[in-house]
Length: 79
Image (cartoon, rainbow, N blue to C red; front, side, top):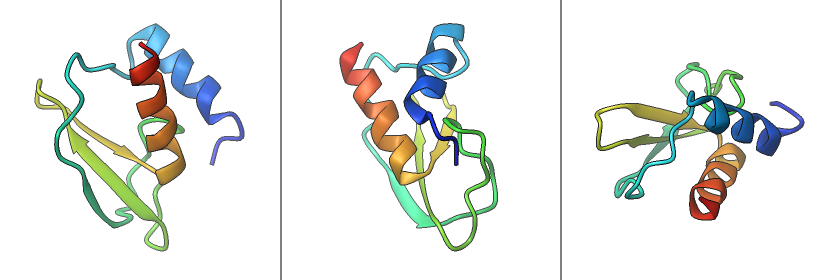
């Protein structure tokens, strides 16, 4: 996982790659990692890790490691 997750998230938000939704996503699905990349750190979420998935109102699905999800949420609240 990226050593500077917060910096990566801030850069992605600034470039528009990672959105800050107007209304926070209401549902969060949690399960075993699928091997897909985390939308925050770009590292795979392996089967031995927990994957956190949320759908945005625009229909986009975001996937995160736990640490990355918390950092993204903190940045969303920070606005």
